[in-house]
Every structure is written in C-alpha cells, then in structure tokens.
Amino acid sequence: MLPDSVTQLLQQARAGDAAAGDLAYAQIHDQLRHVAHRQLRGRRGQTLCTTALVSEAWLKLAGAERFDVRDREHYLALATRAMRQIIVDQARRALADKRGGSQQLRVTLEPGVALAEGPGEDVLALEAALQRLSRIDERLAKVVEWRYFGGLTDGEIATLLGVTERTVNRDWRKARAFLYGQVADDAASP
Image (cartoon, rainbow, N blue to C red; front, side, top):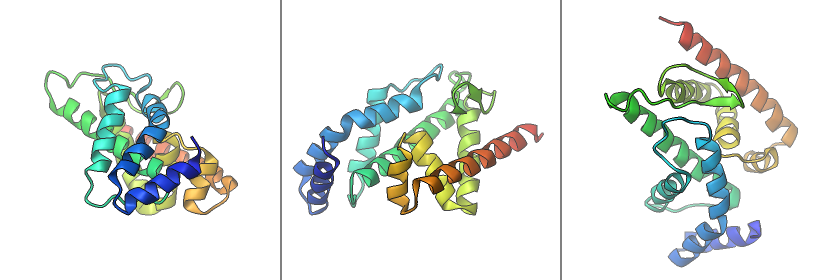
C-alpha cells in the first residue's frame, strides 16, 4: 500500500466516489487495526475488540455528512479521534452502568505507568486533562491524540501540523508533563 494511492482514493471519495472511499478504507484497514489494538492493549474488562473499534470508527466517519479527507495522514487523524471518542463513551457507559461499573479501563502514556486507579476513571481523567490542554494549546493536544491514541509517527504528525519532527517531540514532552500534572492534581483533589 502506497500512501499516495490512499491519498488519490480519498480525493476520489471527496469527489463523491463511494467505491474509492471503501477501497481507501480497505488499504488502510491494517494500520487502523494496529491503532485500535494499541489503544485497547492491556485494558482489563474491555468489551470492545480491535475489529469492533475499527468498525465503529469507520461507521462514525462514513456516516458523517461530509467526507472531507485530504490524505492518508488526515484520514488516520480523523480515525484516531473517532476511536478516542468511542473509548471515552464506553468508559462513561461503564461508570454509569451499576453492573459494569467495576470494570478496569487502564490508560497509560508510557508502558507500565497508570494514570488513575478507579474503574474507567483513568480514561475519563485523561480525556478531561486532554480537553483542558486543548483549550490551552490545541497543537499539543493534537500531538497527544495522534501519537498516543493514533500511533502516528513523529514524521506523520509533523506533516499534519506543518512543523518539524523535533518540534513534535518537544511538544510531546510538554504535553505529557502537563497531562501527568493535571491527572495528579485531579486525583489529589477531594
């Protein structure tokens, strides 16, 4: 799969060719599965599987009134956001459901470092911190979303943002420090 071919197919889909959109999805499907697997890895009590998360994200994107995707990286960014929203919605449902509220949904920014202890609260704590970061610096929030949730490389993120890879790496460090501080402050608050 060449990124250029996906980009061409997405451009055809923007022009109204539904078959081109489906073909672009088929070509990028393995990468979306990798992104979904990465997001779901290590979460106990998870009711979503990789295939379901990819399918739900696709339905969310395909169901949008306007399918306006520029290129492969933009498509991955949109799919990443859709997957994040699905996982956050699932965490909210798990906390609201009396029987399913005790499920553990663990989120880390680095392997082995949990953000919160409560069931489902770690996903929601990260989401709240990410929303605060977005209000302060939208670019930092996008770096987190695309790198952490989407598994995009620094090069792919740099292309999307129009900055250098070094800037993306610096933004990642700043954003991660901010998020850890926010989650720690939230956990310490009564």
